[in-house]
Length: 396
Image (cartoon, rainbow, N blue to C red; front, side, top):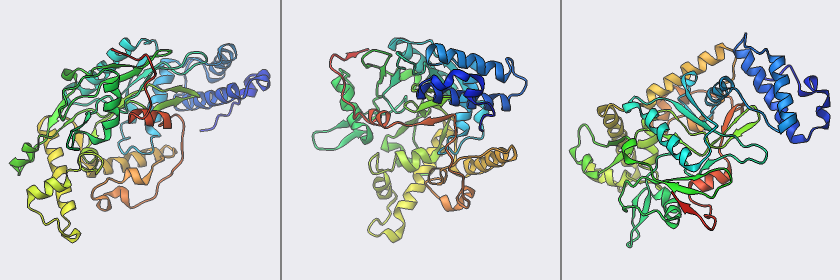
């Protein structure tokens, strides 16, 4: 939504401001206009709030959003997340305002609390924890991990990988910082926290706050012998939240899993656990020809195991058929309100049985709306352990 009030309307002197300040003010006014349009009757009224923000930007180069603005912005950022199929419940996102938390120790404590609250005994709560934004002379804190929970990847002398191959480099990184893991298949990677103006430090993720689900199959007892498990809360940690021109680089958020994220990606991608050949062998499938569709048959059984295991453990999860129908319901609700629903087809269509889900058979708007989540290149590199640790690093 475009604002009907421009920064120059409220501030005749803004022509003298720097380009950055003008851009910030413009984004702030657009966001405030959207906030007031979707929440009529707010106090102070839009012109008064815009004047407050304009004055604060002129004095400090930034501004502070109210808790209500922050909450609305975070929820709308989820509503605008074009790669997320599970947006039907965007307005139920629980927002934790942690902008006053500064030290690495305090950040670690609050990240652990996020996991505890979001897990909720298996009844997963959609949640976001928002730490301080970037501000002039005060860089925001960051977490290098791409998710709050990940399994380490260890290199064996024979070249095999124990754990998650995607995190070999990140594991090497935290080892270089002093981390001493057991070397097992389910070592929880520590959190690498970079507090404002401080060198990065690592902090262990306590095992007792991470709910994990052992993976079994309802028909094949041998599946349990594979020793697989997965964690309950997919909390993304390295995407930048941008609301009204302010950037919050540390704003970890989660929903609950759709089964295919685990069963058709994490466990089967060739650069991850690559389980299809092992499962096909256990099933006695002919892997000598692609026309036997052994990959497809093994893939279905892995996904059955994931859904069965989470449901048996009382941990919230959704299947891709149900989530596809929910997405079209979300789409209809938003369109009835005159709102665009940005969607990336390649992410919305599930990675298994896509053609028999209702989200397959239509086109989507690919607009980039604000507020929104953004994955920056440097954050992506850090998440895979590609950034060198500065000299003099310390361990927490």
